[in-house]
Amino acid sequence: MNILFITIAWPVSGERNLYSDLMDEFVLRGHNVYVVGTHSTELVLDDELKDENGLKVLRIHSGKIRKTSHFRKALSLLTLGKKMAKALDRYLSAVRFDLIISPTPPITLSALYKKLKHRYKAKFYLLLKDMWPQGSVDHGVFRKYSIPWMYFRLHELRTYKIADYIGCMSPFGAEYILSKNKQIPGNKVEVCPNCIRIKKAITVANTQEIRIKYHIPANACVFIFSGNLGIGHGLGFLVEAIKRLTDYSKAYFIIGGSGTHFRFLNDKLKEFPHNNVLLYNWLPSGDFNQIMAASDVGLILLYKYTVPQFPSRLLSYLEYSKPVLCAVNPYTDIGTIVENHGCGRSVNHGNLNDFVAAIKYFSENENERLRMGENARKLLIDNYTVAHGYEIIMNHFKNQNVV
Figure 1 (tube, rainbow, N blue to C red):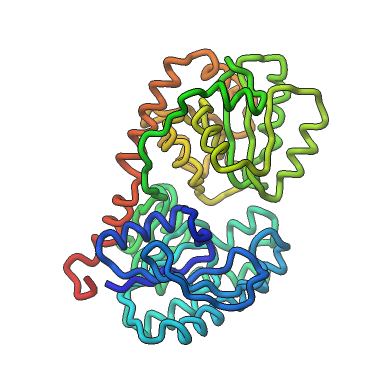
Figure 2 (figure 1 turned 180 degrees about the vertical axis):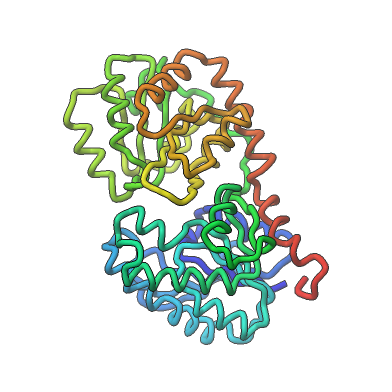
């Protein structure tokens, strides 16, 4: 089966993410996978087709998409579909695809999906990772019913119509998309969660060594929040908790990653004296893995959204057998899933008293942390592996000619 995977989030060669893990599974199951993605840097102006780990990866010059203004990003996305179509014609015109898979964002490729479905008579599976345009409304990029909203909503509706199946990250996501789009048949929407290829159990022989290197207290319970640092996390709330706990020696916080709010965090933490937090924007990969393994509790923060979110950082915590503390809004079910599987706790984002109380609970109950960590790893194995993702998608094609 020839599979075309279209994304703006394909990792650089040698690295992995949700999508490369999933497509690797398709290759291992005997399929031919072709990826159309973008260059990781805008400095590369030429399109390029390469073999990467058993896949054919076609990278195109997309213009500036990452770490840029909303206006410039929008301009790049508006022309992206035509650029991808042109590159496909140039490099892969001889290939007939049976199945097209693509995640959101972006939502602006609806014309490309329609063209390719018609050309190849292929099925189209949409992995719904972000819901435009409502996500942009939540972020204050534009208003609902404005001209930009109507434009992106048109793309959203067309994409849903073109898709044969829509995979959502969680039950809340599936319920939301059906409630807001009454025209979508219920049998088109299902849960197809974030998934990864699980490594062997990860341990650090001497956690004290990495703690000493980064001046992390030897006996403190370490809470880690690592990944994209954006407005949707409500990071000011985390800073308030850190401030309240400056004299509480049993808890220590590690915040790492890049994003629009790294500078915000850096500035806010300078406003008061503290010795209970490490903020970084980059670590050597070996040090990062050790930091993750040496940490005790993973943090999930969700605030400025009215659409269901299910951050992929959860899987990193589960993979490292870490219990999870969620401070989230009522529009996500991630906290409920964590609590129902006995691998963490969830509080309402904004309730500082409950959040601080949960931090102290984890800090003072090591045996409970270890028990929850075991459950976390089990939750990952039982629900969020690439084998699960593969089976969910391919279940639709077992008895059809496309297999």
